[in-house]
Length: 268
Picture 1: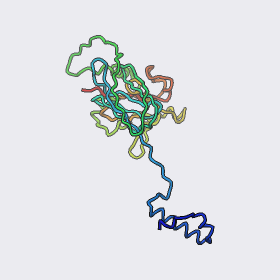
Picture 2: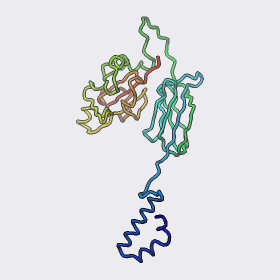
Picture 3: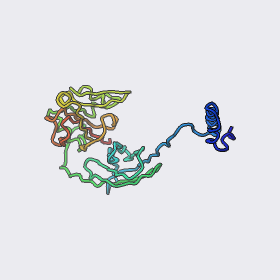
Picture 4: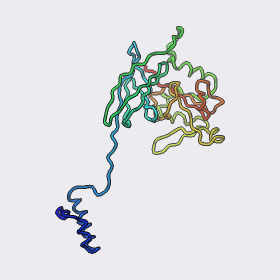
């Protein structure tokens, strides 16, 4: 069959009737199949890159849990685990900026140049910018809350907002974090194929339409959604339904539609 491609197929075409031309066309397709050539146009799949590594504190080498590692300008991000390790895959090749952020630490941003199929390994050390606190004496068996949760419990006592504590999460044992938010008045949660998202509050829908919620993680703006963290990663959640109830520390000018602020779990 392959030998039918020898010669000039155009000249053969002019020498045949339309019926003959159809026979040549069929023969040509058969030859392509026999040679194992694709009949349709195909596109190679783009190869992606990966960044993995460890984030520790300068000086002490302390492992840092819940550090955000973000590819700036994209929605690609991850968090460090209890061993301070992170893995960020499926990255487009090219020049990018990687940003590393954590509460009480000075943020870092640095350029990277990713090649297709490359795995870039990073060892990041964050400089502490925490402020020493006065000594706290506690009586009783119950341990004090983590230092970074001091503001969380102070705001909880003000009577503003809706709060979810670590104790409540452990008591309920939710499959996903949005299960802990279903009793928040006015909060709209939608699910599609088992994946759920906190969409908006009733007040803002009524006056401003589809108005997105502003998210925070450990006091810093967060690009993700509630269920992008698992219940075992979260120490507490605070929810504010509208601009009138939002505390100053979360009122960034883009939080008119409500705030959900999550606090990553403290080891131990």
